[in-house]
Amino acid sequence: MNKFAVLIFALIYPLSLLSAAEVIHQERSMYRNILVEDSDNVRCLKFNEQTNETHQSCLYKNDPQRLVFNYTKLLFSGLLVLDKAPERVLIIGLGGGTMSNSIHQLYPNAIIENIEIDPAVLKVARQYFGFIENERISSKVADGRIYIKRAAIKNQQYDWIILDAFNGDYIPEHLLSQEFLKECKDLLTSGGILTSNTFSVSKLYDHESATYKSVFGDFFNVRNGKNSNRVILTSNQPLPNGKVIANRAKALASRLEPFGVDLIKMTSAITSTKDEQDWPESTKVLTDQFSPANLLNQ
Amino acid sequence: MGIELLGGRILAPFFGSSVHIWGSIITVFMLSLSLGYLIGGKLSTKAASLSRYGLIFLIAGIAVLPIALWSTPIMEAIFIQVEDSRYGSFAASMALFFIPTIILGMISPYSVRLLVTDKEKSGQVAGVLYFVSTLGSAIGTIITSFYFVLLFEVNNIIYTFSTILMLLGIAAVIYHRLFIIPSHTLPEALHE
Image (cartoon, rainbow over all chains, first blue to last red; front, side):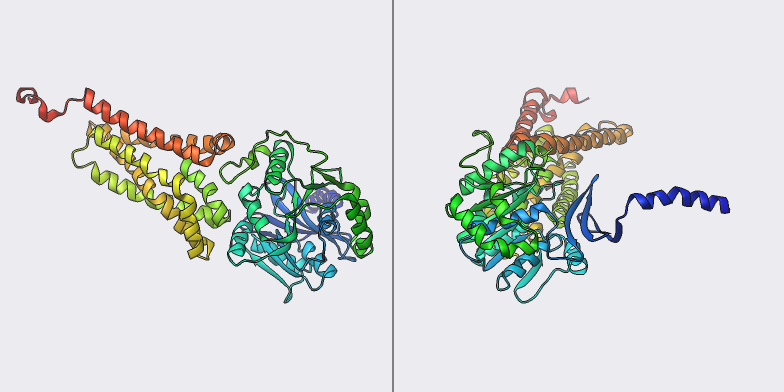
């Protein structure tokens, strides 16, 4: 019996060395498996879908303000296009609530609405990621498309819409159609911006680009070059030129520094589709009627 | 099944892609299929013929057309009326799919009636029919979700389904008129 126990211990022990990460919370929601993992100084929210685990949101436990992920940082490129401090912000796709917290710390007076489809994600964000809610920051469990349609009926307007609902594994097709982007555009104040965090690869990249261009005209791509992440940055007004952007980066750089965002460096990660259109002119636009998004993103 | 699958795509712009959308669609399809089976079975007891069978196909082909023609205004009206997306999606599924699916459901029991000639073989005939229709559903599902949505617009797929149904219906009616001589017109002597 003793021998047996030793054998099992000997088998299991090396496994514990392999994964230093400790799962501190696990639950199965309506949509996916949700994991919260702690390793040393980093806490991560992970979705376990199909075969691969995707990191949704991470934070440094001893410095929660500092952003871990590059793409989250890239979303702040939006500040280079906005001509004033954002007063009303709409975030679709909550994750750990990192984006909402950061914007609140930067602009304490801004009204921020968070929309998340999965109630379990909202719960985890509150419990494990210090998601801040107060009279200015609200959260709602809803499908992003429905929320935007209702917001249009109520004549709500936003200076900044952040679309962060894609996780690389499954793309909600109804959040990537020409009709949806038009509905978003209609919610923007004059000079308001939309920043979308997307993962699209291969053929979908072309279709996605063509769809954004059909609604907004030329847009900015913000990339860090290494992976398939890109942030699409658009506005309902003409986008500013390089000089304006460089000046804004200089003016804001010190305020973004505590978040680990280097705005000056980021200016070189921005390319305009006016200068470089990297998809064929004939690419078909995605609509509610025609959207093979999940089939193309292989 | 092809239409059921497209249902998700049709409802998404107004009611999202939450779990309850599929709940609504599947509930409405099951509900209307069950009613369709009942009505189709009842109908088959009275003067069943191939041309009436064809008529069911024809009506089904017409009944799916509103899905392509008026789904946007119908869903818009429901979206404004019903705040809760669960009941909204259920109401929209009812409005769009209830009637066509009832009519499609009538086809199965009516087929049993037409194909069964021998009481002894009725189970076998029903078995073959279930086999064909369920296998057809499986093929319809996979082709629609894997290929059709990649190649065509949702409305075009619905128009194609509708055309196929109507053509089948017309073919059945014509075949019946041309090749099957109605029994009451036959001379008395042949009835022996």
